[in-house]
Length: 318
Image (cartoon, rainbow, N blue to C red; front, side, top):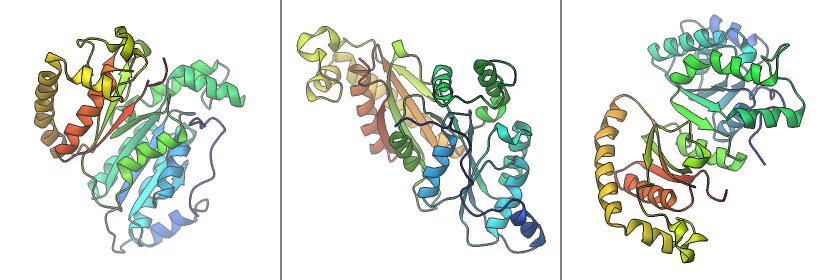
């Protein structure tokens, strides 16, 4: 089953009512409040925002779907006056008055002492087109134009908030189980302030660069096991390939030096409040070298005290 949101908006998660909670929140002005953890899920229509919201709800977050940006602060204030500690809102272009309003709402929440984080969910154009066509629906910004016109208009609308997002999630090649694992890795912490979480993603350059990578390293300088008949059918997760790749004269020095670079970056990321790091490791097809190197980087980052997992975007595509 593929992550897919093109079947339309889900019902709001949680009993919010149309406007009642907002009135109540305003009436409660002056009550004591406590800072909340706040997650705003936004991104491209059809990319899986509602699926992400349902995962957060399963993880114990109070989730509201399709919340207009202007109502984000009143909803958080209402929750802060009760026993709510983790609040998530799914916000998209159906709210119309969108990008600048949302950025301002997030700024105000941060100044009020809350901990707002933005999850930007997206997918490649061809994937979004396929999802919409399979459901025979129009894009919300399509108007009288084409489906691609609607997608392009939405990407432009989201430029500002996408650049400020704390976590990018590309669902192009994720199924719902992989999406759940990604969000669980980032948010399943029982309300504690999360440490820096690292995802080390292997990929194949011939399938394109991962858009959600913070750092990209190239493993194509190492000999390719594809050209060794007894290794071709294996992957970088197999002991034979791993030993071959990591046993190359340059591999250990490369890993050591880049681990030193990461040791330099990690304290700075933490000081700046960055909670998610995606390190992408590429080779030609994403089957041998990048997989073995990604697994090793994940092991080393875990040894540095990070919550680190390896994910292999293109494994199995060949």
